Figure 1 (spheres, rainbow over the protein chains, first blue to last red):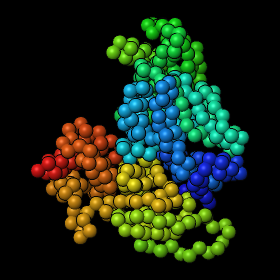
Figure 2: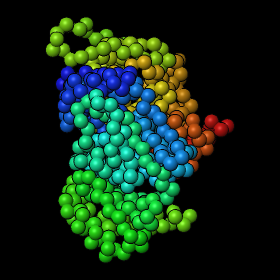
Figure 3: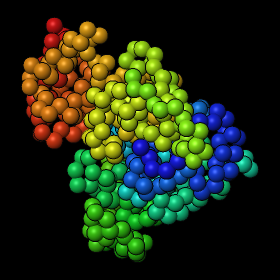
Figure 4: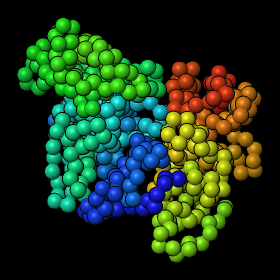
Length: 275
Length: 171
């Protein structure tokens, strides 16, 4: 039982959802998979009076077009792991989705887009979305708009949504090869630090994004894939001023392992490019 | 099925609604509060107490049910969101006459249960695995069990029971 007089809404079109969200203002939360939000409400960390379920809006599309992959707000990790088109055109998304723990009960319900929208620092989807150069598709009372995931993620648990707005999908350009490294205590634990490495299209440069180490992902570019540890330590050390301390690890640990995670992600990118 | 006291008409009462389910093959409906989790509705409104309240955090799996053919942790589902769904609970795994399913028989034979609190999760993920894999490896079985916690630490016998169930199903 959730404490408080919560009211559940299941709108069946986008405009109705935006209207309810706009009317309820800060007293409303959006429900997609619910695997992050519902336990947080149970613990009393969120106390909304209105819950707007997206399940009636048809936001289930998962498509790999010529140049883009579009992930609807209700697409689960299980679908992203099983979809042959995603596996072929976006192996990083399939790999990260396949690494989510909690069993098939959880991966069949939790959504990649929901994880981006919750922007919990320990989660993986926000930093992967930034690394891929993803665009967030937003619907609200004023219609549709888009913004980059990097701009959308503004702080610990905070995203750049205006009153009445919600995310309908996320689109990313294809990346045939990527490298990914996740450092964590055990199979079932949240990540302590992640690193994603991708080629920046048309430049020969490499983008590296460090996740889970700070409130929002830290992104930087390197001129080549073979950056030494000294370069990675200096670059990440300068960018990661406010490393996080939580029950999993102190800030010093995160600062120490982030360059190592980055190097491992670069190594994996190199292997995948050669493959 | 337990009934709920009629709404008092109190404007300060928590929002509520009647939800309709296909529950273990039969139609059922009950009045629930919008703020109820599915696990609590199943236990306290529909009277099916085999679905257990464990961690309330999606970690332990003791509240696992099947919703429209997909296994889910019912502490992560709002009861109102399940309106119109077909749900199988642990009570629906046995035959209608109460005899155990072959998977449950295998758990019984291998002593894969101590206190039994975690069984909804372990039995549903085992059934889910065996629906996909006729001859799962031990690694596949152990991977399938992640997301479920047995605090009697009986995993060895649970793994063996699933292997035995698969073997018997293959004949």
